[in-house]
Amino acid sequence: MATASADRAEPAHAGDTAARSRVRHGHGRQVHLGFEEGDDNDYTRSLEGGPIDRGFESFFGLRSSLDKPPYFYIRNRLAVKPPSVPIEASHTEGWRDIQGAFWREGLIAPGFRHAAVTPDLCDESLRVLTARAAGDRPFFLYVALPSPHTPWLPSDEFQGTSDAGMYGDFTVMVDDCVGQILARLDELELANNTLVIFTSDNGPVWYPEDVNTFEHRSAHMLRGRRLGPYEGGHRVPFIVRWPGLVQAGKTSSDMIFHTDV
Image (cartoon, rainbow, N blue to C red):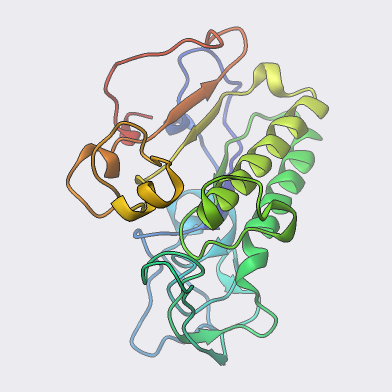
C-alpha cells in the first residue's frame, strides 16, 4: 500500500492532469509494478524499481499486498526494519480462504502489525498534507490503502458498525480514513484548490453465500466479483471532488479507464 505526493512544476489549472506532475511523493502499497527483487531477497539493501524510481519524490508503504509476505514497511528505497521473524498463515473461521483476516505465512519485520497498516498509512497521509501545505508549490498525493483488500482487520472502534460483517466494518474504516483526509484539506484551506479522486482497482471478493448471509450485494446490481470476468469484478467507483469545477452530485455514464487519468 502506498501514499504518494508530488511537487508540480507549475500551478494547477482546469484541464491539468496528474501526468503533468514533475516530482511525486508516495505512501502506501506498491502492487504489481514491483520492486526489483533478486533471488537472494536481501531486504537490507537498497530496494530499486519502486515508486522512487518511477518519478515519486518519497514513498512509505509495502512492497505488495498485505496478504503476501514478507511483511515490512519501506521508506523510499530502504526497509524500515527488514523482515526476519517467521509468521504463520492467518484465516478466519466461517469465511473462504481468501476472505477474512487472511494472510500467507512468511517473514515479518519485528514489531510489524497487519492491523496497524491502514491507520499508519492514514496518519502518514495526514502528515504529508500538513507538511506540503506549508509550502507554496502544488503537489500530487497518492494514497493506496491496503483496505478493504485482505486481511480484513477493522479496528476495535469499527467492529460492528456495519451490517455486512468484518468486510463491511473494514469498509467503514476506509470511509473514516478518507473523511480524515478531506477534513484535513478543509483545515488547511486547500479543499477549494484540490482535485480529489476516490476509486478502486477491483470489485469485491464477495460470494453468493455472502449475499444470502448478509442480504448485502457488495457490487450492487453488477454480476460477478474480483477474479472473475464479469462487471462486478472490474467496474469500480470513480468519485471526484473539485469545488467550482466539478458539480457536486453530478453523475456520468461515460466509460473511462484508470489510465485516462
